[in-house]
Image 1: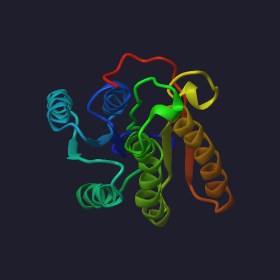
Image 2: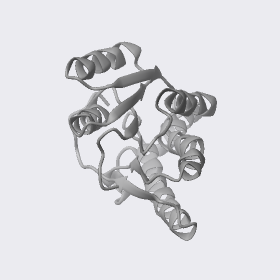
Image 3: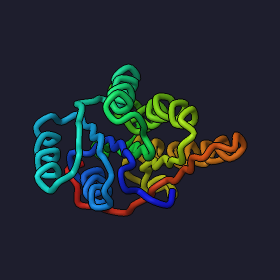
Amino acid sequence: MKSLKNSVVVVTGAASGIGLGMARAFAGQGMRLVLADIEPDALQLAVDDLAAAGAEVISAVVDVADAQAVDDLAERAYTTFGKVNIVCNNAGVIENNLPMWEYSLADWDWVLGINIMGVVHGIRAFIPRMIDSGEPGHIVNTASFGGLICGSSSPIYTLSKHAVVALSENLHHDLTSHNAQIGCSVLCPGWVRTGI
């Protein structure tokens, strides 16, 4: 993509942390924003702040672990703006630090549902529409430096972020082999001061 002005970006986990930072940066480039988060109050504060600064922004309260909710987000984005150029699958969570065998199945379902399936839902909901539009675009999947190393803490999170790295590499190859005008990046930040 050569110009971001008047393009449309979707950011999940947009109410705080990295997602809010992305939204502010994209707004600064003149992009129209579709912000999603599971925290309604924080999301509204983010929308109000960005709109007051002149951004064109809509939002939706979305649990990215829910495929239908992400499909609905895509529908809203396309109904409102007619296109989507960039999707940032950014929403993520981390579990408390325990030995691996002490986590409940609910803990595993929660982290993997958001950190892995949230990205899968974003890919399935947006990429077919982006390809059909014929416009250039880009997917950014937020992983972590934890997706590149293994250690002795947060095993569910670490596993999920390794999966996001692998998923992103596969997505890049799929998009390339289909000559799509859509790029793919995986973001692997270190420690960031966020609400996570």
